Image (cartoon, rainbow, N blue to C red; front, side):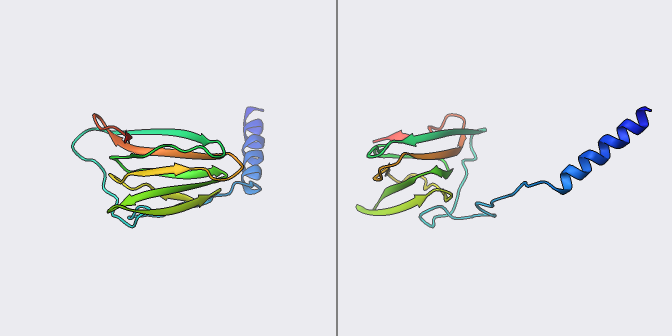
Length: 138
């Protein structure tokens, strides 16, 4: 009897797996450059640490000028986010909308802002290292 029940469960789960609606959205595949087309370089002197947050910027809100000393991966879950990057005294603006992802620039001052009338939710995963700050504010 146990063998029959196990067989029925296996067949049931197999049938469910065949009709699964699971989908995959690939964000990056072996990406080697960040949002500013710079090579991605991981810190190697300290033990690795991974941190993640979901940051919500209300309409009109901004992060303030800051920079990251380690690579990060960001994904816009809702809304639209613009980022001003300061490069050699000039401002370069990049805009990311729902469903878009980017690899953050390392050691580049930037300010992210929401200039829309809807909230913007961004998931950020930081590839840090023990003893290194993930974010430095100006």
